[in-house]
Image (spheres, rainbow, N blue to C red):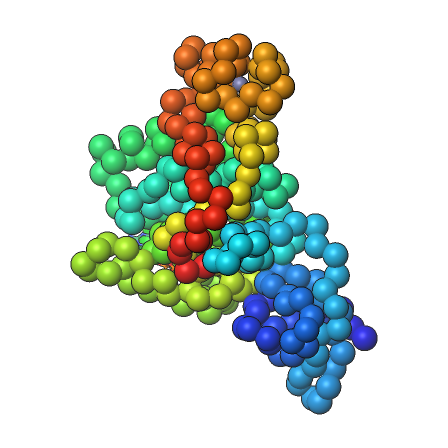
Length: 299
Ligand SMILES: Nc1nc2c(ncn2[C@@H]2O[C@H](COP(=O)(O)OP(=O)(O)OP(=O)(O)O)[C@@H](O)[C@H]2O)c(=O)[nH]1
Ligand SMILES: [Mg+2]
Ligand SMILES: [Zn+2]
């Protein structure tokens, strides 16, 4: 029996890297839970280059999204840092960033927000981008502006990732795979053009893959999404996901949902400008999302 790390999962087969760095395809028994990218597993060789999965070792974190028929799907395991990637094109969706940041907190991962394709910014859009990033920086998230084309601004991202397992998440076409190619020189991550008609990405990456960073640490490239929905959460859990809600004094009612209750300290902080109106609107939107709605996107 050997141990290894799953670097990519393709249905019932997983690509596993052993201690020596050798990769091989292992079959997973149909009745066993499916390993995902980032999993540590036990496996047994059969034949010269193949093997089969014996079991998944305990995970210290799971990146999840709701499944279409209820429950949830795990996209990647043993992730320390979620790098929410945005770009000037396709246009950033701050509400999508908020949902990722909530997910990261609830899943016990750190998070960072990076805007790639900074070479596409002009003076006006640059200052808009900077104020959006500043909002996340004020909340304590590492942020940065970078570009793959001139290889600029990547040092802060490298620093965040050093010695850890990070995952790049975000809309299709923001340049996640391009970042992998910059950060992991010998990687073979595929890169796609944006659609000329819609300006959106074409969902080039179809499965999560793990790469090793030259300075230590691992980086997982993930398929772009149109949408990232949280699994159903109640007000108490959702409030844990909004970092700026967590060190306020307790509201008058222990089960306050921060919608309209008297003596609500979240509403007071929004009124006094200590919590941003935009983030509070994101909170209300997530809270009112129908619990049974099907998951969108392709990831
Ligand atoms: N101008 C500019 N274009 C970039 C930059 N980084 C990536 N691109 C381009 O953006 C397009 C999409 O890049 P990808 O790396 O495939 O994007 P992705 O986020 O991996 O997309 P999915 O795999 O579909 O989720 C390609 O045409 C890249 O050449 C950048 O820093 N500047
Ligand atoms: Mg990609
Ligand atoms: Zn309240």
